[in-house]
Length: 162
Image 1 (cartoon, one colour):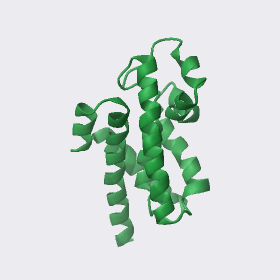
Image 2 (image 1 turned 30 degrees about the horizontal axis):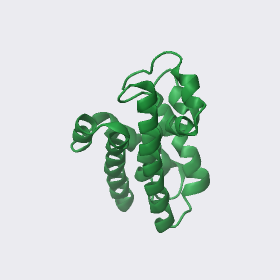
Image 3 (image 1 turned 135 degrees about the horizontal axis):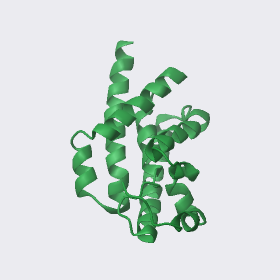
Image 4 (image 1 turned 120 degrees about the horizontal axis):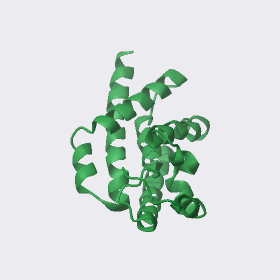
């Protein structure tokens, strides 16, 4: 991830797509914006998403992914940086994928967050492939969605045995 040129933050935050791409401001964290975005993603999940039916939840994910592709592409165009660190909407989607059908309770929520961060950082194949080969808004979003799928599978496996 790269830093955006100086002065771009104000312009990004003045536009609704910039606001979304930056995870409602969490992407401007001076340290570990990806982790800050992942943590920020827990708020809407906890208060709005965890009780959704599977069909509605998957619909929210699909719409959120599409919106994220659009928002990330807009920020990439504005900043002229291929993978700007301030774009953290991909972390939101990755965390939400990881927490799909998660058992109730905050320990499971935290486990999903940790598993997502592990897979997002470690980038096993095909996450690493998507990160290297796909560009633009879609590429920015896809690698984190794939990391979320790894976390989802791991979390469901742990839940099955506990």
